[in-house]
Each structure stands twice: as structure tokens, then as C-alpha cells.
Image 1 (cartoon, helix red, strand yellow):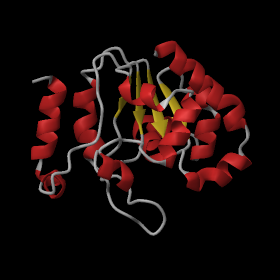
Image 2 (cartoon, one colour; image 1 turned 90 degrees about the vertical axis):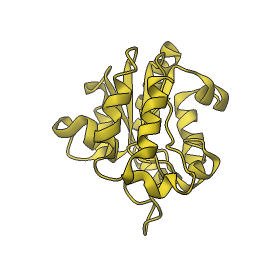
Image 3 (cartoon, one colour; image 1 turned 60 degrees about the vertical axis):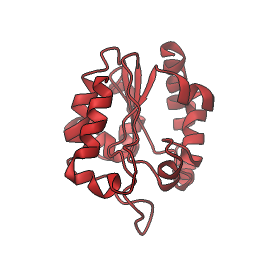
Length: 192
């Protein structure tokens, strides 16, 4: 059994995850010793949980477009890992989904990251990942953090969430498509 399988087993046996394990829902993440890039997002959505595939929704389609890679490359390369801030769908909120559970990433990410020695860049998708990984190094808001993405390279690359709900944000911030997306694509091509 690999270390990743051991950690997955521990996650499923953890009492905090019993409601998911009891329903037969497995934690949704992908880790690999060969990973050079890791994508850390919020948490799987309902469609991702149902299909047992992370980023298997319109947000994932947009993310892959930003990265400049095919669906096949995204799912089948060992060079890209995926660790959401919570490995389970947290449920629906008034707008969007419920936030990832507090303490989840703190407990499980270090064990998994330790097993990925070739990581070059951590892509931080959305405010939850940026708050946790960048802490006080973040700018005053998500827009400013993403706008200053070069300040965090090569260790981190902050992105806005690719959700269709962020269409307005993308229209108001054309610099994202002009500056951040090409930098992301260049990095992805270099690593995979």
C-alpha cells in the first residue's frame, strides 16, 4: 500500500468524515510522487462528488482552458495533483456551496504534500486556498492577490475561481486573461 493509499484510508476512518464514509463517498483528491503542479481549490462540487472526478463541471472546463490542456491531460498526467481544501462536497449554501470545513486542510495536506518532492508550483484557486497558504502575505482582497500573482511565483500562483458565477469578475478584470492565463499556460507546458 502506498503512502497516499494509507493517508486515504486514515481520512476515511477519521470520525469527522464518517457521514461520507458511511454513505460510501471516498475523499476526492489526487496525489503523485511525480507531481510538479498541485491545484488547491475549495472543495468538490456536487457533480464532482457524484461522478467521483474532481473539477468535473463547468468550472473544471474553464480551468482546463486557462491551463491550456485537454481533459485527458488534466486527468491522466501524474504531473498534476489535486488537493482541495476539503476532499468532500460540503453541501449547498444560499449562494454557491458551503465553505470547506475548518481544520481539514491543516490535518491532511501536510501528510500528502510531504510525499510530493517534485512540486514546483501550488496553484491556489479561490480565497479559501489563498487565505490558508498565503496567510498574511495576501493582498487586501482576492482581486489584488491575483493581480500581484508574480510576487508569489514560483512557489504559488493565485487564481480566481473559474466558476461561471465569476463571469462578471472576469469581464471587469481583463488583465487576468491578458497576463495571468498566459503565465499559467507557460508554466503548465514547462512542467508537463
